[in-house]
Image (cartoon, rainbow, N blue to C red; front, side, top):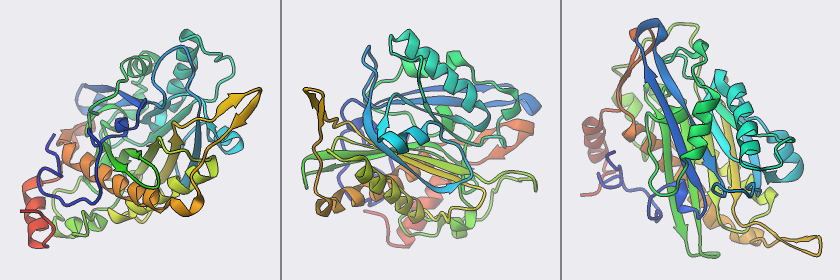
Amino acid sequence: MPNPRDLGLPFRGQPGRFNAITDVPGVQVGHVTLISGEGPTAVRTGVSAILPGGPGPQRPQVPAAWFSLNGNGEMTGTTWIDESGWLTGPIMLTNTNSVGVVRDAVVAWGQREGWDALWSLPVVAETYDGFLNDIGGFHVTAEHAFTALDTATGGPVLQGNVGGGTGMIVSGFKGGIGTASRVLDVPVPCTIGVLVQANFGAREDLMILGVPIGLEVPEKLPQRGPAERDGSIIILVATDAPLLPHQLKRLARRAGLGLARTGSVAHNGSGDLFLAFSTAVPRIEAGVEHWSALPQATLDPLFRATVEATEEAIVNALFAAETMTGLHGRTVHALPQDRTLDLMRRYGRLRG
């Protein structure tokens, strides 16, 4: 994919090696992408898996919190996260109608991996891809979820029209999966990684680094009918900084500021749901949990990094996504990159 940073977009902050959520040690990502058929049976969907601690016999259990900026969407398992402060397994991303089958698949996968999964409340989040995908055909299966989980790895992350983001749209341009990261030296050496499944926004609102791209590029809008749904966005924030669940809630809220930088107003019909977790788990000695946590007054660099990485992850999704034709021959065009770069240059927002 063309890297917006390499093309001269002046994002603030220092990214990690892969500029991805996988820069946080232990975090792994896997995708299954489903593209087949044409016309009324076009399949343009998939499923993505994010493992906070990697695969293996030990069920990952990490401190976590979630936040709903606008709740016209679904993220399962969040009641227990609120109650306990723990994320106890992978996070799955898919389309709206596939939440149930993917949730059940995670339970079965956990049993296969040897977890005590007879009691399990998996986290599965969705955005709606029914403009391009035969969403009523229920094409995502348990086997697809198993494959996403089994193939999750660290390192570079595929972005754009992949996994759960395959059929997604951002401000009338093709959207999907995006990721970015920030490496910090203060208050302690740590990493913030963000991954989004982006499917939100109106064309006239789209901003990239302060440039009103949506107003400057009003053409090539997909022709939506009056019954078409608004979009949504899922934002996952990972860190290896030692944080308590209520501090992770503060981090999750800041993802909304990064979203706002791209022009979102969190429409009534949008499910804007965010989850943050830390891989710095408390140690247990003599049956007592011993937590370490950064002081509240030192969190500003983490807040800034979350905002910056969220904004960049959304832009990365736009730059990675490619034009797609799907259900009933509907076409959603990719962001016109040459024109976007010309506009960034004209507004003085391009290096070189």
